[in-house]
Image 1 (spheres, rainbow, N blue to C red):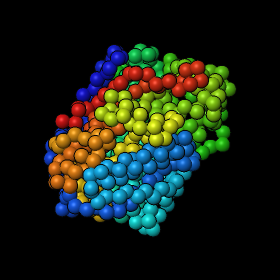
Image 2: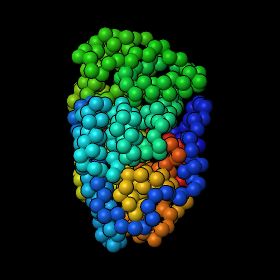
Image 3: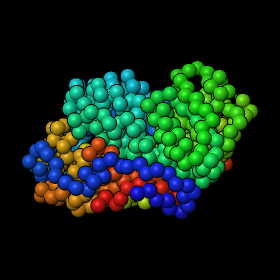
Image 4: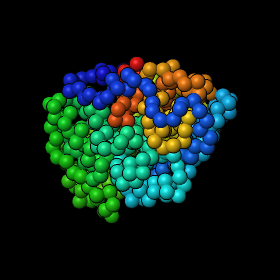
Length: 427
């Protein structure tokens, strides 16, 4: 179910099914391990983009993983459960090859039981296909949003705590229709990778179905030294633009668009990849002022406000987009190990979906000790995350997701209080 809160939907769009929600709300019985037994040391690999295009997200993402491990270990100590999470971190460099090499190191040398990450879809897909799936090691991406991830032949080992861009494409189309009219003409552009291509494709399908037109699409190579030629193709006569990119590439594309004299950031929408507070300072306000976009949000998440308060106390500074999701990735892996009473990768993979959805008593990170006690007693639990209810379905995708809108206003990143919700309440 799609519903808007504090904003009126202005045109009808086709429903996109959230595959397997019924599965997430049905059988909660995991497999593997005896359940409720001792786990001992649980080594979780953390793949974060500390360098490269997504580097602004990497530091906060690493902090979120550390914070999750700290919460789990404190809860285990309180509950008297034999579980100690140890994190092994590697930098993916926001690079598909770098991510695969880092994952291989974590699995072959560090012997991790599961991996939280990678972040970019262009990293997640090859890392899963070439490294984690063959090894049988569960992978939980906090921000790999390409719809292609849903259909991976993964032997039930690939999960994510961020929703598919099959949903975000629909959200962007709805928000832009409210701003420019459902019949507006839009030029789309995107970094030519799994994230950019898929999100533009999803947006285009919904936009055209709603009566709008696409005046042109310009995919571009994020590694190119200059994007002046592509900027010239993007700028021009149109009602609006929808451009998908990452911060490092926008340092080239944004100024190139400004130089054309035929582009208006105030008529431009983007998505989560450009939701970075430092972007106006890094790129210049001329390249950002008035831009708007969408991103998964923790607003109205079961433990979103509590997480923000914990972050302020323990970490400080900006939370960072998808930090909630990485926190949840680590917690869900730990709970799955506790449910199985095992640190074996196969046992963990078999329990990740079951601990994140109904049936079962609902728990958040605020009462993890109670959740671990319940698991030790062989009871079902339903972990409700800092990023949202999760309710991971048979494809490893969240069955419930919330999106918010953002803008660059006065040189600052401003989050609105608009919430666009998909799915149920975990029941």
